[in-house]
Amino acid sequence: MRRRDFAKSAFLGAAALALTVPPASRAQSSDGSNQNVLFSEDDPGHWGAQVAAKHVPQVTLNAGTVSIRTPHPQSAAHYIVSHTVVLAGGKFMSRTTFSYKDAPVSEHKLPDGYTGPVTVTSTCNRHDIWTKTVTA
Ligand SMILES: [Fe+2]
Image 1 (cartoon, rainbow, N blue to C red):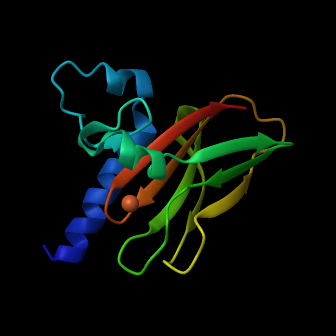
Image 2 (cartoon, rainbow, N blue to C red; image 1 turned 90 degrees about the vertical axis):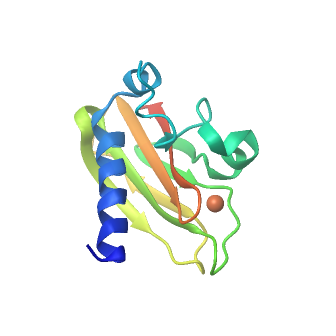
């Protein structure tokens, strides 16, 4: 398997895990198999709180729009790659990708009348995938 294919597969596997396993289940994994796969403010794993402060997506909801900002500096060597929004039941809603030249800021329109969980991921090219869930 080529390195690029492997990296793509690893990312998709982690993203699928993030979208299909409820946060409470991940946190309660008895064998620790999900430790250090996905990260959040409450579970920064091996990265710790200092890394978490720059990677946990900041999410606001206003009039059916999800606004996401990751407080992470952007450089060619180290940057936020994407934001993803997933709704209840693991329903994928949208994704925004970034280059190192972009500010890691995105907006996503919720379906009309949607209420329920909105899970956001923010992916760093060096510090993995960070999640935050808010309720619409
Ligand atoms: Fe990072």
